[in-house]
Image (cartoon, rainbow, N blue to C red; front, side, top):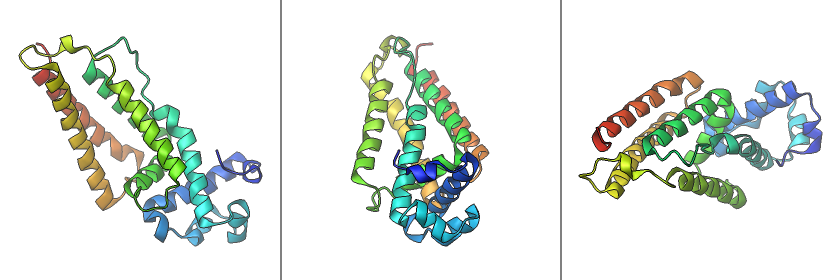
Length: 213
């Protein structure tokens, strides 16, 4: 984590108040339009103190990215028993873990979601972009490793089953991304629950279509 030692020495509750205020401002307005005046007003500190801890808006943004990534990288990595090859069950467990993470870390999730939506803006440090891409690659490799193809119906090639399921669920995720790009990340953690419930419903339907009866 890049956050400096002086900031670390703050009382934890005060430190978290500042971090959350900054993440919420960047999440709501994006990097260019985010206001450090709004951040200090929400955090209840002076602007001079904010820039004592973080020397510039860019440094603040980059330190927030490091903090958010370090906090969530383990939570968002799919932990499943590789001996369990049920592909749809894996997708559901991955979604359940994401939902728990969203509820437990709402400020960080909103911030990282906004960062992802403007990932091509040029404000994301190359090293952080590489870290995020590597984490995603590792996640995908785990998700698609050792799938038990005997669970699929035998009148459709198993690779077709996997690919069609993947396309369906990635299509749903892209729809959610487009919606959030238009309207912003939901402010309340509970707002994610209906989205995930719909996702689970689609998984159940895909299981009916592609799995053995």
